[in-house]
Image (cartoon, rainbow over all chains, first blue to last red; front, side, top):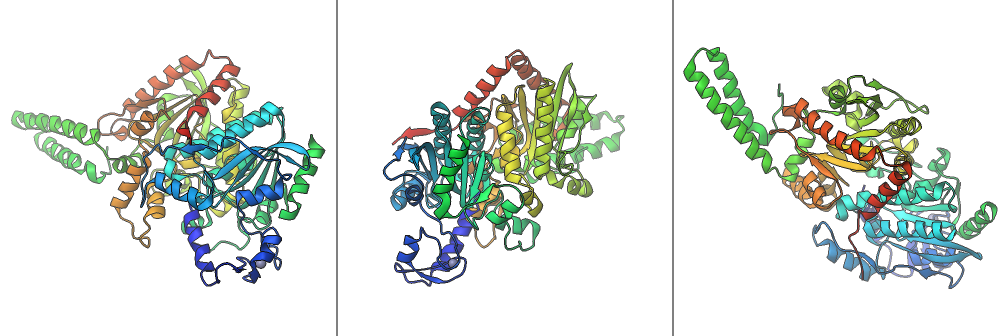
Length: 277
Length: 325
Ligand SMILES: [Zn+2]
């Protein structure tokens, strides 16, 4: 499940030759882009429409009405139930990620309005331990779903994750069941749940709440799947087709409703809420 | 007859070979030899008990994958003699890595579903080494809904390295299939009793084990990732990983039945005969039966609404390792 580390290493390798700060290279078309121009364009490559990964805070900004977000339970944190240690202890790793990202965990949640519509919102951040789901991410999704059920507000979850958080062992696996059970309670007569998938969404996150939306949207070209492409390549010992596990591939196979450009995301979500609620 | 000995089983195997040879020699007539045999048998029993009482997590992992270890159908054949297997997901195909059907266990009509590994090369491939595709999970879901319609408890046996990582599985929505099972099981209006009999491999295992009673055989494992996968991520030495790396990862993951019991993630540990489940399938099946009957008794009178509500509460408790910073 946790294949994202290898993939991360890949992207860093690619970035090495680009001078820090002013310019970035597009992962997709390899064009060198002026960073300010990219930021102004919501981190979408102006040449090829590739959607760069964005932080939870950046996504929040483009999704909700200015100043409307009230974060809930920001202090939830893991207490390292396995006493897990690789090169450093899990506790130290969490601390390093907190410093690096100015986040406390791989997801934030709270209430906000989207074009005037009140919603409950969860946004994941891939930069925090690969957006992996441990007890805290699981708990936030559960609480968000329960909050949506209580208030009748639509639930919006923007996923971006490498999958389960290995360092929390069985507890991270069990989060898949917990969040799915919480979402199940919205299904019969509860509020609308829109799942928004961005690059990348894998493993235990895809195989739980991300694939359970009443409506599932994805950003163009996002990699989305269950098993990571590396694991699949090693298993079947052949190269994967180019569009494999891209958002377009999922649309083609019937697993998502629409591919939506980042610039259209807020408008589209607002429109879906209007039409269904 | 035991065909395969793992490294840590070898001292037992050697002793058993000696006993076998002596038996062959004596034909039971020579009193000296039969005395010797008795002595050696006692020694073998003691050796089995000592070796198996202090297995490491990695040894347990190997044992959970033991080629002679009983599989789902071995237990079904003992526990439900009238079992009728049902096939297919009604959408794409019949996945042989998961079996399911209807039958009675000690006068209790139930639906039984489980991962199925194969014995022997041909059968192993046919069962895809117990790694289901999307259609396997969908078949399981169909049978759970059948159970709900006819108010039959669901018994599941867990034994898989994990969901299959392949092109077809992704094309047909492996993630959606697993997620849908988790959702369906969380609100199924009949009791669900799950027993981990071998390998509980990640999401593919979880997709059959959201339940009201979750137990594990003494030497089974349940983990978010295999020790090999974990070691590859943590200490990748250019793919040059050794058994001691896997052993370290197995330690770190806390994947044994005893670990999960301590964490209160499972409800009970089902004992195995000395030397492991493969030493005595009937006895192991008997131990499983006792646990299933106990759980059935406890669950079958619960009103459906209460059952579903309690199941949700159970799940919510797992991962209570949280604190406010
Ligand atoms: Zn580009």
